[in-house]
Image 1 (cartoon, rainbow, N blue to C red):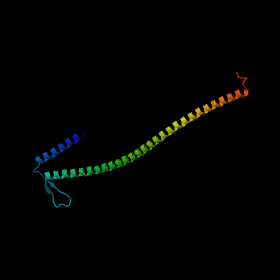
Image 2: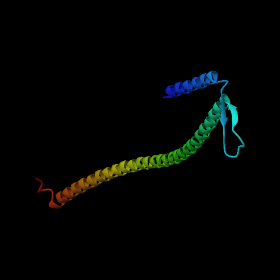
Image 3: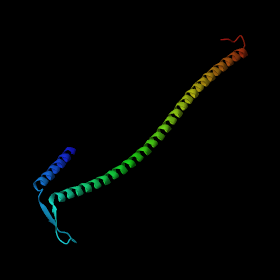
Length: 147
């Protein structure tokens, strides 16, 4: 697309140059409101003035669109900064939750091992109580009634 625009601009410049060359001695009479009579102006001055005026208009339009683009770019940068800050906050919260999760897992493992130890102790206590009852039963039953 840029190539086509450049070729079109080059063709326009070549057209204007050849127009000047072939009409360098031509004078145009211009009559306008408020003028006492028509003014004879060389053709090349009219074409140069029109070309310059058109170039100035395009430059102004481009600068306005460039200013709009700069404003939009600033807005996008501001939005990007806000979203980056939000992402950083979410990442910080995620890291703290991961740390909390690790702590809770460690607590769970510790509590699980404590429960297992308590179950073992309870089972051992139950076993020793059963043995103590059996010995007590044997002692109360007497030495002759041993099976």
